Image (cartoon, rainbow, N blue to C red):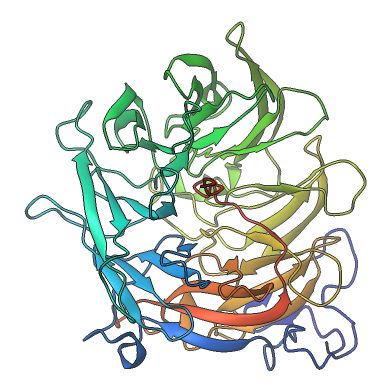
Amino acid sequence: MTRARALLIGVVMLSAPMGGCLLSSDTASDQASNWTEDGDSGPGLTATLGDPDTSGADDWPGPFDNDPETYDLDDDGIQEVIAHSNDADVHIYDPQSGTELATLSPHYPPAWHIQRILNSPAAAVMEPGQPPTVVVTNHAGYVSAWQVNPDAGGEDEIAFDKRWENRLTNCNDSPSMDAGPVLADLDGDDTLEILVQTEEQGIYGLDTDGSTMWNHCWGAGNAEPVATDLAGEGSVEAVFASDAGLITVFDAASGNPLWTFDAAEHMDPASVTVAPTVADLDGEEPKEILFTARNATHDVEGQYDRNRMGIFAIHGDRTNGSSELVWLREPAWANPMSYTRLVVDDVDDDGSPDIFGMDWNTIGHRPGNWERLGPAHVFRLDATGDDVWMREIDTWWSNQNIVLGDFDPDPDQELLLNAPVDGNDGVWRLSTEDGRAEGFLSLHPWKMLRAPHPVDVDGDDTVELITPVRPADESLERGALLVHDLAVPLNATLPAPRQVQPIED
């Protein structure tokens, strides 16, 4: 690592309101994983998934505007990359060769308008002894299940059987959906079921065969559900967050509501845009639910800077239906909203969890029009919600997740997030101790769409980053997934509620 440089690097400004050096002063390392802060060296690019030169397809796919899934679908020891594109197809790639192994095409109604597809796919073994299944939700409210057919396909192909496809019309004749599916054993029958929600109204628990276990025609939204055991009693709860600020906890097997919390009592409109995070903040049951909510009550453009998002920690009691606000922060430095899921881990091993997040540098669509408000803010809070540090990140559009893990040769965890340098987009690595910049991975000539996904794709116990990108030249309507080899052991805290443990045969 080269010595610290000036605070301003291109168009990236990392402010230090609490003092301290912003750039790492570690000595240079021969390991490619020890990135330099100017991006001159760093992890090697091993594949560009979607490139027709390697995929075998006739053209590039559309942009991938959601988080990819990885799963060893054909039991060859390699994690395939499963990504949902704005071209309405799900593309499945070999992350080493770049070959497109399969394309899944969910159904859409005639003339259905698609601008962006935010639905992330999910993959798992749904029933013991069965091949893996890819579950897809789409923009028109369809849920489909595609199971691997091990008796078909070939060396460069994975064959699938479409098991079922249902549109969730119980609450709306023409639903839309942005949330991805969440796979979990909801009722203790050793098979995986599915949690989903539509955008307008409609909360669902679906059985393995796609039939409806239960549903409620309540206000829903964009956030993925969460399946969890809040009280540590062995039962599963389903947590849903709505665009109206309502957090609802259900018994996952029956769908019976257990308790609710209304963030709209504290701010307006209180939209919860991404999945809540479940964590134990105080060492006592029940666990807490953490989330961010939008606060944008002023409709005068010059007053947008008066809006501050809320950061909530709540918990409830399933036995009596009560809920409690543990703490609420409306930081003076924050923008009105966030599209980044909170990540919680004890990074300094002091026995108390740390909370990491980032705001979105816009007021949103109402009362604004997605105006960029200036820098974004990445932050670390303690378990009581107080600031440990905050850093300004002068990025273009801070609507991606952040990733927590150990991504360099030292034993400490780092934070990965998106921001450019000298007009070139890329991934910053920040110290979790104080937020100082430690390195930059340039993605030039691409622009990052969603957070890098850390995974050991080839079973060698080291991590690759898989990053959804689109060309910096936005006149090119194409997408790709960049695979970088970090050459360090995989140790990451993933903000992905749709991921589940595979069922044992």
